[in-house]
Length: 304
Image (cartoon, rainbow, N blue to C red):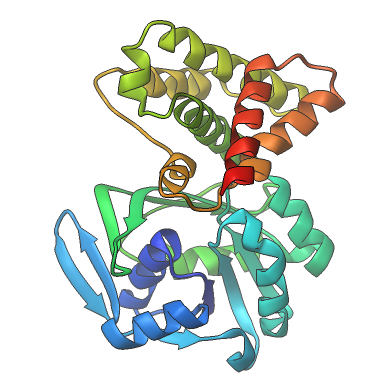
């Protein structure tokens, strides 16, 4: 299977490297700066098991040739419009596109551009970041990759995707209810991002602060109310596990949005929090805590 990995950051770099190591034909679509960095130093993985360096196949938007069987999109959500332009020449009649982005807005955006039949569901669970020299740092052993048809019908095309991905040295989950998984991931990451960015700290610091537990549970409840109003068939056991994980004061957690914010980078405010507020408004839901988070993030973006 010919695979194009759009992005070689922490997510794309890690999972693309594992696919390449498993013998898959993987090309990384990257910008000029990342292209030069990877050409010079290779794709470096720092994992709990040690350091590995790969010589990846690289391409830039103006050098893509031929169609790909699978395009995995791993950029930040605010870069999606440009990435759609970049990958367009690589999309053929049989191409499937698997976005691994935060939130859900991107699914409709990709479907409108390339067609509903081309977009499949995908998400990952990994604690990873880029180091100062562009190395991919996997901070814990967690490395799960979920995928499946958005309508739950995993036909022969999805079976081929599974055959390519399941032996790539990561924990793969071929899901027949990927939409539930996507909603639950959004519940986790948006709660985590909201409280960490608003309080400017990790969950351990928040939960051990006066009013911190009430803040976290209040944000969680508002987001869950939006998800439920949108028609998601939330799974009680899964949502309880998410709240339990977030509420553990012994385990300090932060989100990628919080880490980007503390480094002065652009953040996925509209895609992670703003889209939830739009959906809440559609259902006339009161979400004062989410509104406070959104104002906080908008002020940050104005001050960058």
